[in-house]
Image (cartoon, rainbow, N blue to C red; front, side, top):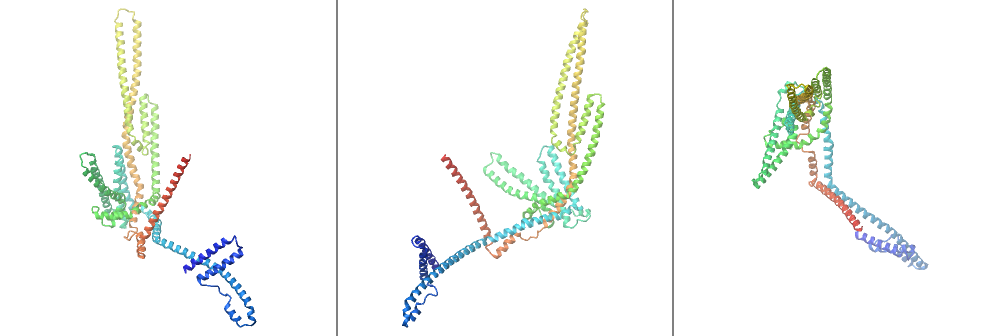
Length: 613
């Protein structure tokens, strides 16, 4: 059948080509019938099919063989029969042309459908992987996100529960106190890294608070008296112990790694020992990564994890199981922080506004009292008789203005307190210079007075009375010298006294800064704890609810989908993902090569332009 199709198509092609070739030499009405007859006859030889309703010469022969006048019509009938057959063959040729065209369309249709079938068959291999990815996207990026948002919203009211709030206040207070104390010590001892230690240690009281909040929630003690809650304190300190163990182990390994790194500092240490220390450090680094993961997320997961799972931090198997739990739930804890942060801001607006109003009222009263004291000192200053007393009042006013900075601006003053030492040093240098100048002037004045007194005694003891005018001049010079020296000495002593007041004021200010910074820190710890305790109580419930959410040990949704596809076809979804990855790699390579080809074309064009120039 296929061979016949090919022969017929070739025959049609030959006839069409012959027609195109003969068109310049023959009229179209002559050329087309001839070609149609030729095509019909050749098709008959190929397929054996001839047109129906041809003239029946056999029947006419039988009719004419009877003799008589009938035989006279034989030639005419035969001629008309031949012309009739020619016409039938021409019509049959037209029919055959349409039949061949229809066969061509059928062939195209078959080829087209085979191509579509092949494409669909190939795409069907991708389908399981695409379906898994699609449903996984819906599950993890839409449903999963909504579930986390829903958990964050449903625990909003828990922040206002009395028991949760009191537990959170204790943990928050200790956490902020540790942060402040280590920050303060870092400033005093000029070791900024102490704040990092304080930050790590502040995780412990927060972990305790989360642990006790989980315990209260797990034991349904939300509406019991706080004394009942206190009697059940245990989970929090156990959680702290676990986290502290990992923090201690982390610090020990860091120090151990530092010791091994010291081997590279000694030239007499063998290469093999250095290589061994590098291998050990690599293993320590691997352990440190997991410890950091435990410390970073452990404070959020351990409090609830210990409540439902028997756990010992010193057991390696328990730690490995816990790490698996962190890997499985860690991303959820990280992502839930965003909606939790939004709702934390909402639920903390009211306590923050209350604290802001209380702070504003307190500051207004404080500043009002200090302004009254400043005005009183200014009135007192107007009645001062000496400039030194007035300057002393200035220093008191300056000290009151400094107290107006408390507690807002005291932090910046604490950070810049070392500049006070430079100011004191600068004033002391000026003070020593003024004292040295005063001693020098006193010595010079004493020498001049001694000379004048010596000269006067000589003139007064002289018998000659003609020195009276000179004696008068010397006495006047003595009085002028004493008067000028007294004025200069008073000015110098005033400058010295002011400098001593400045030094005493700066020393007292430096002491005040440290003390005021402590008071400001304690104020921030107390009132910050009052505001943030609501947030910590809310977050403790979120983390507890998040741990219990879909934590029933069932396989992951992605694994479940893959298992279903594998049950239907044991080659899937591995085959689908393999083809998908290979396709992506090929597309990336094609795009890469296209980009490189474009770059090479530009390079060759630029070279051609340069050579042409």
